[in-house]
Image 1 (cartoon, helix red, strand yellow):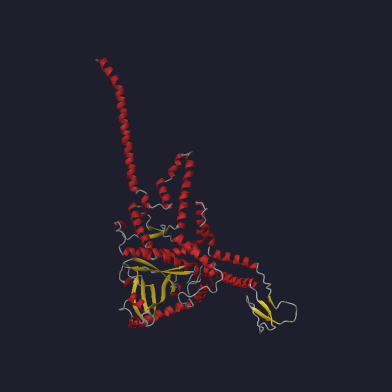
Image 2 (cartoon, rainbow, N blue to C red):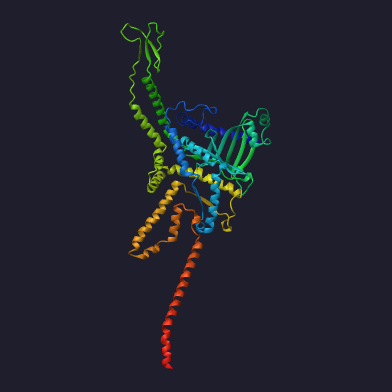
Length: 541
């Protein structure tokens, strides 16, 4: 396919993707205007322009921020070991050399997330802010040759997606602008059209349109380090000149598209912000009416007779307004207040009801319960189970679409940089799987450890009647499962070979001690027999 035809095809596909998303952009803009006061979709405000002109109540924004902070704490808290790595083969997970090597790999990967240069903490916070509010959020992981993985939160407004027949992300389009000097800095003068290079010299702040397309390659070459054989194809197009300016590839999909929930037949996600939008718009309308009536009650309009005081008779009912009325000759004050008969005791009740519905949509009750310092460990575990049941569909989708691909991408980048230690020969080619040890997952594992202890106590009670029942329990496995459930690092436990050696040495020491005791007892016996033997010898003599 000729280059121009290829560009036309990609641009046509992108245009179709834009058309399919227009209804979503209208919804997202309403959420931005009436609730969250962040991001733009159908309008383009200049940076720093005032927002929230239509917002009279911040329940949605506050609930969204609370939920975003809770997701960060529950799923990717940088102060905890929030993921674990294991082998697909369960046999390898029982080999100490394999688990110790995997522990080193995990520590290096966790450090890659926590490094300030990676930008993970700040950018994942942006993802968590977008995800509940708009239902879809975007993270891009750049492979930096010198610094390793670098995390960049991309605005949803410039990112478009398409899915395959299974509903998984297959194509990502990113339509973005760059000033001329930024384009030269990112692409280099050699790859850019002359038009942009010349602008960088004359008008370096002139903006140009670019399109980044990442799509699954039809025939990837496994193990091929060349860009043409990578599973994901990368194409940068200058929209202004309709030229391909850079081609390449990725070993893993670099865009992580997180969606809260997805209705059948739809592509983009729906989140609490979408569900709470009608209630938030109603709250804004109620507050607007409430405030206007309160202002008129505190500072009502004035009725003024028209006997030369003020000309005209225009009706104004805003606070502090003056309304000219005809003087009918009655005995009344020439200037007086217009009595307001507005009654709004119902407003507070309706506001409270609507606010609770919004908070419920954002799961605020569960999140705030976690913050109660009076809770016991048992209550925390039970609350974690409850939250897991309520949020399990959402958390499951986040693990599949955000966390797991993100960790796979980071591990892949680090392995290509040779940041990991050389594995033992028997681990060559072995596949890994990801296990999450976030506070929610940790609470589940802790409950499993507690179940083992409770069951052991029950078995001990039965053993008082029949000690042989304890033969059913593998105590070594039980202890290791309890330590694992409580999140204890694997280095705390001795290797199984060391345990066997210790036990063998202890057995040999016991055996040697028994032999010494037997020899000592034999010596004592001989010593006791010697006088008798001596007397017997004398008698025989």
